[in-house]
Length: 213
Image (tube, rainbow, N blue to C red; front, side):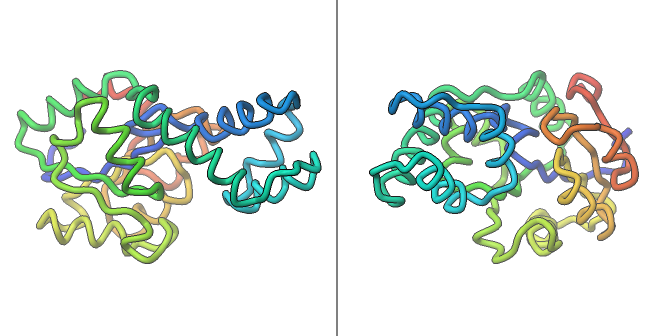
């Protein structure tokens, strides 16, 4: 399945870490502290928003007396605590990491999240030191809809795109890697709806990392 692969670039959220529900859970906790129910309608509305847009939305929707800065800080504190102490790895990630390590395959991570949270979640789950390095979108200066972050990783790994596997659950990120010559593995995180959307932008799709161990 990965016969010609010499290195791997992992996404973190929804791929290595079962963290996709953390932000919505943090919003729920924020509102719960104020006696406000967290509804499905609010959850749906927030899914398409960037962080500060979501903060503004919540403040205006519920006429919260808190400043936007204090709301953002409270949510960030909740998220940080979960990443450093509660978020677990996706099933069979440790076994897959051990398999790749034994096979001499180099590993790194490319994430849209912050370095603090990426290192926090991988560190407390004991796999941070198994990776060569992490590169964030902020450090690359672009989102994963631009291939720059993947090329930066491959350059540091010393591998060509066609011998570098990119593991992604996001269709947009997978499409970027696939169209730029990386061997792309679609991971079913359950967060992006129909798993079939990854069919046209990946070389293979997996429902579980057990398939690779």
